[in-house]
Image 1 (cartoon, rainbow, N blue to C red):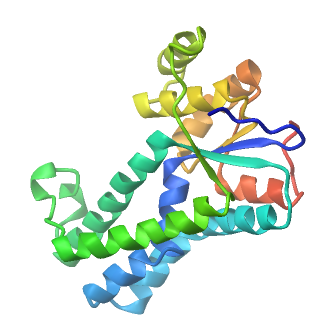
Image 2: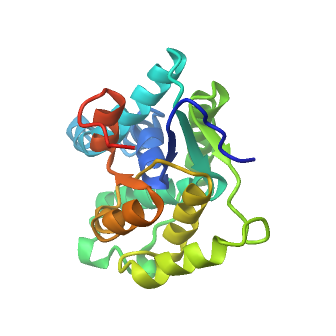
Length: 227
C-alpha cells in the first residue's frame, strides 16, 4: 500500500503521539489509576501531559468526518511500538506507586511485573481505541517501505542515521517510510529529533517535522506550514 492523496496533504504520525491518545482518550490510564487507587490529581497531571496529543488526534478524527481531504497515516512499525510505549508508561506508574526512586527507573532489574488481568483489560481498551482511530478511516495503517521496492531506501535511511545526531534506528525507519510515501508532515513528541532533524528533512525531502501543537494549529488553519 502507498499513500495516494491527490488534493490534500499527507501526514504521518509517530508512536508517542498515538500512545498518549490511547492512554488518555482510550481510558487506559484511568483504568490503571483506579486499579491502583491513585488520587484523581495523579490522573489529571498525566492527562495534562497528554493534552496536546489528545487535541491533535481528536481534531484529525473530527475533520476527517467532515470531509477533510488530507490523509493521515501511521506505519505498521509504529502500531507495534505503541504497545511498548503503553507498557513503559504503565511500568512507570507501578514504580511510582512502589516508591522506587526515579534514578533507578532505567535499571531493567527494577521493572515491575504487570498483572495478567491488567494486561488483558489494557489490551482490550487499546483495541477499542484502534476501532476509533483506524476503522472509520480517520487514520490509516500503512506497511513499512521496503528497500526491495525502492532503490533510494538505503540512501535515505542511512543518511538519517549518520547525519542526524538524535536519530535512532526506529526513527530512521519511520521517517524513511514517510519520505518514500511523499509525506508533507511527520508529527512527533520527540523534541530532540525535531530540533536536530527539522531543517535537514525539510530542505532535503520537503518533510516538515511538527510537534502536536504545531500540527493542531496547521489543521485549524493557524500558522500553517508552507507545503
